[in-house]
Amino acid sequence: MAACLMGLSLTSCDDFLEYNPTAVIGEEEAFEHPEEMVTAAYAMLGDCWYTYPFNLFPYGDVTSDDCLKGGWGTGDTNYHHLEIWSSLSSRNPDHMDELWYRLYCAISRCNRALVSLQQHGEAELGADVAEQREAEVRFLRAHFYYKLITLWYRVPWVDEVVYANNTVEQTSNTQFTHEELMNMIIDDFKQAFDILPNVQEDGGRVNRIAAAAYLAKCYLDLAWGDGYEATTGVGHINQQYMQQVLNYTNVVANSQYGYLEDFGDIFLPENKNSKESVFAVQTSQYTEDNTSYGRANWSIMLNGCWGIWSCGWDVHKPSQNLVNAFKTQNGLPMFDDFNDDIDYPINGQPTDQKWDPRLFHTVGMPTFPYKYEEEYTLTLLNSRTPNVYGYYSSMKEVPQRSKGETYNGQWQAFATADYVFRYSDVMLMRAEAMIETGDLAGARTIINDIRRRAGNSIAKHISYAADQCEIAEYPQSPYFDNKDNARQCLRWERRLEMAMENGRYFDLRRWGIASETLTAFFASEQKDVYYCTDKNGMPLEHATLDQDGNAVPQTYAGYYSDAYYTTDKNEYFPIPYNQMFYIPGLYTQNRNYE
Image 1: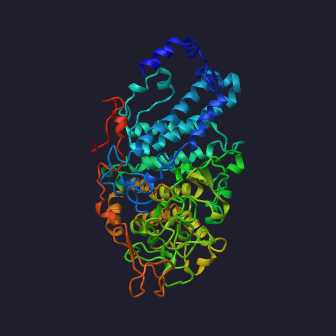
Image 2: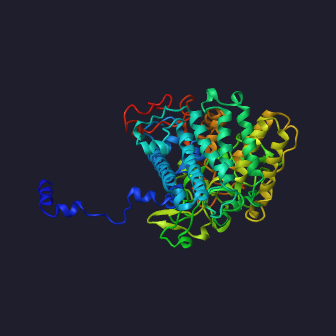
Image 3: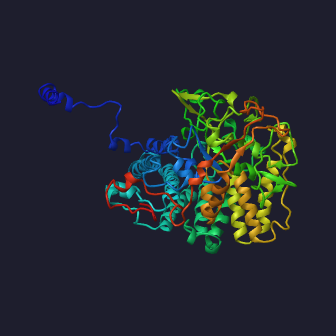
């Protein structure tokens, strides 16, 4: 090395040092192009990977009673710590550090775009366009900060002023309280709401209605408390915040958005910008944008079904508890005894047990067509490790197999929508606020509208399951006679409608019921069994047989015997170890984590 350095010092040293690199733009020059800087901020929306998924599916689903991690075993992807909680620490999963870093990279782009707009926006774009672009960027920054605060409670607030003053490394995560941070996020969304149009000429740009949905979400979180169970729940509801939820969801309810007629259509790529999509991260196939791999949803690259997709890695698998939750009796949920017995439908063999139709749009199950295509019917071979994670697969986030797939080497990519807000999500937030402010009739109307849509979502895609489906609308009594009953209906409806869409744990935390729900889930789920027979007791295709020719039941999920959830700690995730020691002493760790 010394000889090489000496050689460099004696030959062409001046030429090497004075070389101007190509394909690089300096910061000052970049700031002279505010429109391009805004585009660079937008580009961060989908600039994620399965180890730093901006849709937060490991943190919102794998942590909950809806979902098992999946993959080849508990050591795959390092997300196992999230599904059992007991081993969660600042070092595990190490992917948390990547996610923290990438979210702050996104915020950095937003801050740079704001500086560029402030310095050159009016001159380059005109006052009106510059004002609108600033509102868009503030929306984007708030979007990324909302994810940070959702995971880590209190985070350093780095805005364009901190960036311009070069004080990032002096900014602590204790400078502002959780509520103060949430209100700063709200301020950014309010600026977007006040300035942006209802409809953008460029469909991928954020608009006023999306800002209204996000404002409703922020106020709904605040209305229940701070997320820690001791200070969250029914006894801590802030009625003023609940009223804000009603105000902003009313804007969405009276906008261009609405319910797509068939529930199954929502999750097909060709419908990803339908009227159901209030705000979604845009994706594309390589055939659409003339690139090598498209602008794919790389967050879910591992989530394809094993043996259906060429590179399906079988991650993000529905739980038996979730499947059981879709049971109906006389068309209504079985609130009290849904999880007493393990059950699942078998294609072509209806029984007295009926199911909410949304099960067949959400969960891939042996004997049923995968994503409605009979040529890709699931068997017991379509699970990578059934002795660990069972036989169910997730369907919402992937396209139909016949529509093809995009690759990057051994990896898989899908151009499905990454929804941030669906219309029914926003309407369920509205129903939740209605219940807490006393409008039980209004909440019942919304919930029944959603159930009616589910009931009308059979013939087009899942006609093969028609004789297994039964769903009814709620009568007023006893379901909406009081707040307690209405809450139960709302929470159940939210679980079924939004299942496997990355937010179940955050709902449980908001309501202050994460510990009781997860404790019950850990106790029951570790006893999972799939019996590998049809309803006539005959072994399913590819079942393992004993010496008498009988199907051997497959047990799984036994690792939940090691799981437990600790209140006043696990409500939020630990600040990643690398961040804690980036500048020792700058950040304070969340409660009861080391």
